[in-house]
Image (cartoon, rainbow, N blue to C red; front, side):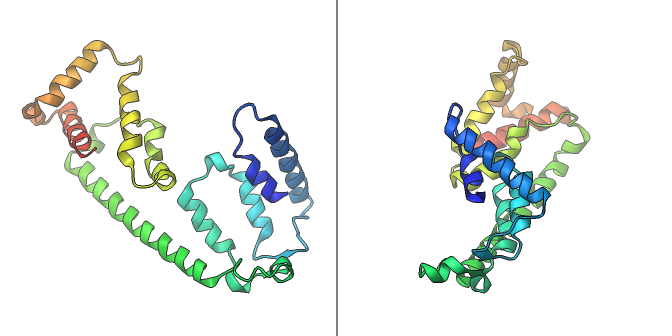
Length: 212
């Protein structure tokens, strides 16, 4: 039932069968959770109630790939997990300590890269004095860049370009605004003029677009 719930979250609009399966499995697991009956006779896992509870509290569409992986590292038991089906169906490799160790190494490596990138972002922000001028939060979808990179692989330009383009197609920007942006983007010598906030932002955008 837990696997049905997880699979049903991959539905597309209009898929009534998966939608019904999602509602049924969610209700079933929620009822079992409220009665503290999240048990399975076929598996003795580290924390099955915690794993199911996390899935109910954090739907797939709201989860972050790396945080999901970090949580699963605590749930994956490796060779120490007792799973009756593993013996009955001769699935000797279903739980493997090598997989667990590789997953930990991968997560630690990724975390190191993220920490380095975050440090560089902070240094760049302080250098350009972003914190002293920016008062409006960026669109939420730009914060999903790291998440999407986990899902799509090393192709940041492919999904960054549509996001950046979409910003300038919003109704809040007039033709005059767009023309002013293009003029300032082309004339890089204006970016450092008087160190005004918009010059700082233009410099950062210029550098980012050149990288893309």
